[in-house]
Image (cartoon, rainbow, N blue to C red; front, side, top):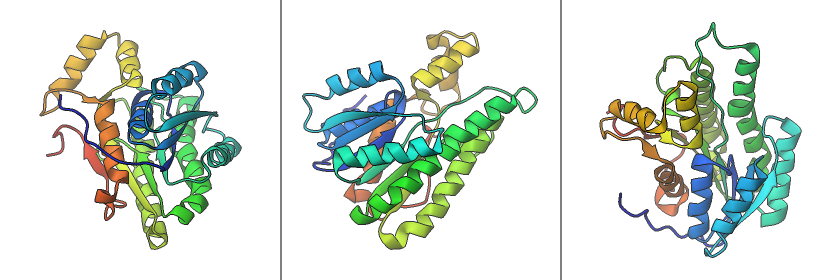
Length: 258
């Protein structure tokens, strides 16, 4: 695999939810390598410490703010704490999310509500709390949706519903805040090799190698996307080269929808 592209985010102030794992972690480290000052949000203090240590010799920096985005008031506090650390916001990446493999009949009330609360409500609350700060910087929001926002997937009723909501919410906000100079971009990855995907394999009784091989069979490029490749697209969507992109989903699916 070729090296990641070079970006310069020197002095940029970045908040990433779900930043202690998977795509959020990869984006945080990529932004730090590109010179940004990053605050990651999550609940895993041990993982956060490891990520902060991994970034200590990079041009940028990473700090941690604890909090569950499923709670509205906590979302406001996460943004307030991040602004206090960074002195403002230029970029917000909403990467936190959960998934349950279940049909409609198999999905419990708790699973449905938790999926909507984290994947949709929490993202909305973080966006809403961040927008006043992003108006000042004419900043960017990246909302991680999914290819499940674009078409149905079996045994993922709640997840597909939540990611469809994320995509439509992002489109609407992009129109509302374009006059203020804020870009809001949805990114729709297919399967990405993250702890969440590997957890899905385990739930289905598959080892990692078998799960990755089966997932790759459905992809024209014949492999699963890496978290670092999603991070590359996140950084591109936030850079000046993407300054005329807003609202429309950027799809990273290895050709599934070609």
